[in-house]
Image (cartoon, rainbow, N blue to C red):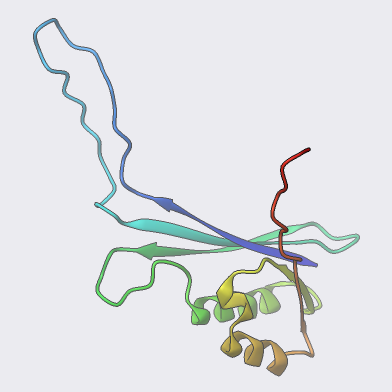
Length: 134
């Protein structure tokens, strides 16, 4: 059984504060991170009774290029699932997914239907809106 989720982190550094001598502006050097670039991580945690658990992950670096997607693409999800199929003993995957739009897309459904011999997908139920206590 595998659980897959994704997250992202912007690479723009946070504002820093520092001290300096009276009358001098503090100089704070911040390294790394291009303006607006972003790293996304998709990870699968896989469990099987009697075996050790596995973590399989992929990185996606967004560099603000024209036409580039900020999040994972359909082909990246497909290659991750196929890689997990190769890595896991027995090769059969029962996947629990959230309700991200790309997980419900027609192209992903075609991929899942084409690989029903080793891939079974369950989507988590949607969250209901919170109600105010009375």
